[in-house]
Amino acid sequence: MTPSRLVFVTGGTGYMGRRVIPALLARGHRVRALVREGSQWKLPPGSEAVVGNALDEETFASRIAPADTFLQLIGVAHPSPAKASEFRAVDLASAKASARAAAAAGVAHFVYVSVAQPAPVMKAYVEARAEGEAAVRTAGLKATIVRPWYVLGPGHRWPYLVLPVYRLLQLFPPTREAARRLYPVTLKQMIATLVAAVEDPAVGVRIVETPQIRQART
Image (cartoon, rainbow, N blue to C red; front, side, top):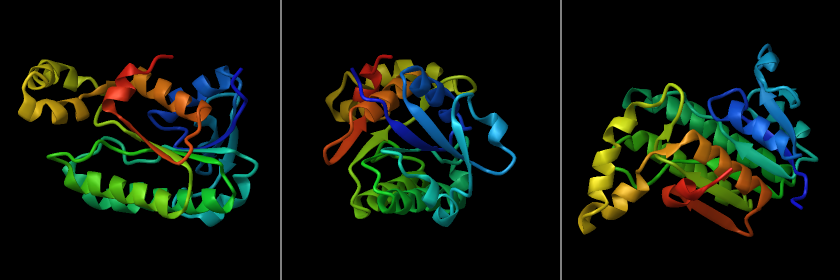
């Protein structure tokens, strides 16, 4: 039987947060989620709201314990090259704040949704997430770093049109590795991957790439 975890979640009202929290609760885990004032109602029922600012660990660090797992899901919605400054101001800043707070709270396992890398586009986005990974390592946390490229789901379906291209590129040695690394994953696969990461803590720092995400099952 999988031990019950107390999971502290940032980004709980976002695209993945709204789906992974019910999945965790359904499997017997407890969830404490960071939200901005006035957004408590957006959290899935059954989770405990912690009001604070994801960019300022002083507003939530004291509320993390006794959580044993920290799930970092903060990120700018609909990433695009035009949002380069936001990637640093939001994605990276929140990752750094969360890593520091989790380390100070004695969290046993940190789960961070990063991005596939290297990548030929979205340089600023990849750099911000790579620096976020570095912050997790610097904090000395045992961690699972999940690296999808694009997550298919409601409102995020256009890449289905290019999946045949990805499949074709996997047939040729020069492009095979990159095509596998950047292949879109489904929201269902991501949720399964995050639940599995929570239930199976890393011993050191574990990297979960796209091929592994695509194999995940709920």
